[in-house]
Length: 539
Image 1 (cartoon, rainbow, N blue to C red):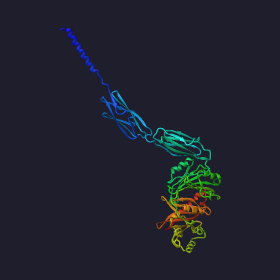
Image 2 (tube, rainbow, N blue to C red):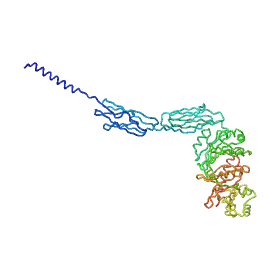
Image 3 (spheres, one colour):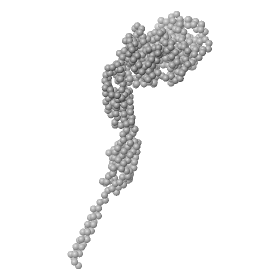
Image 4 (cartoon, helix red, strand yellow):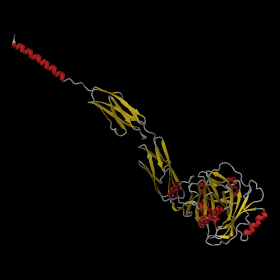
């Protein structure tokens, strides 16, 4: 045997085996990754989608730049769970998920629908004073972008928009005209309106309708916005005839006070703008006053009077009271919120009167009243005495003769001047201070609005024909006055033996029938006296 040849063969075989062995060790299988979805879409609410992951690798990982914010990922075997939180924003949101299996990668696009756009602005009505100034409107939205555009381009208002607010800066208004512009904040399909108003030089002023129930924030926003400031607040004290009142010093050089009144702090009764002195009288006699009212939506409600107006848009009526009495000159502009009456009501053929020949006459005392009622065939039902001086009669009540018709009074009451608790005696001691008539049918003059009793339009019309105008409301009692003779009529609902009846109370008061701040105080005093008399009625 050739040893060399044999050795060579063995060496060659070993070398080949070595090569084959090395080839097997160096063999490498490339990693693969297949995803069942390359993109997923979600509605705006909470959602979850499963994506199958197929790979030849033993493990894989998934990640997203939004993971932990609104998107979360979870592995479950060969399934990738993609979860999204609710999208509360008004814009679509997008992201992606990367899946890696030992170098083999896949990408999943993620989209989520936008929420409905929300856009709120507070407040929606801005009042800027005549001297100029700035106000802020707060903006709340679920979008990153919103626009603000004016209804028209104006030079007097600067609009500064930021992410969460709109700053409004107004120049001084040196005209006598109020000015207004509307702003529209818009995002997507949602638009919000902001009404911006600025007062001019305010020779005359008008109130805002405080709404029902009365919106104190609305009153304060309006008055402070135009440059008024609160001088006095009085809470309602019905037992003493005191209404809730907000009294402002106004920016007007003529009508310097404006007072918002409510009997209970819920239902507004009247708003009174007060101007003292001859300057106020001249101002309302000026043709500019009529023009001012017309420009602001007020029209005459009585063709025979230039002192009664109504504003159907703002739901306010206006009565102009002018007093030219020496030392009591002034003007009261009394505004009354309009309540639309439901239905029609029958009323008196003419306004009924307490016997005025008995009222506040120096020569008519208890004896004369008794004789009058005796002659009329009336029956005395009640006699009351002054608790501070038992010898003085304070009240006489009578049932009238016969069977009254549906529109006739069935009872009459006389309330006398008496000595007060401090021993002071009035000038008309023993005379009739207040007279009253009682009617069984309340609907002859009153109708129910919620839990309130209001004077019917029909009776108000009759009173107007007799020269009476509305003065004010205190609690459930409504006061009307006749300027020609200073007679007041108070209309109210009371109970007679637990049966509702209507009472008309009559009183003369020259000081309360005027205008200006002095007359306003006199009216408040008169109201207290009338309400005290109402509470003293004996049934």
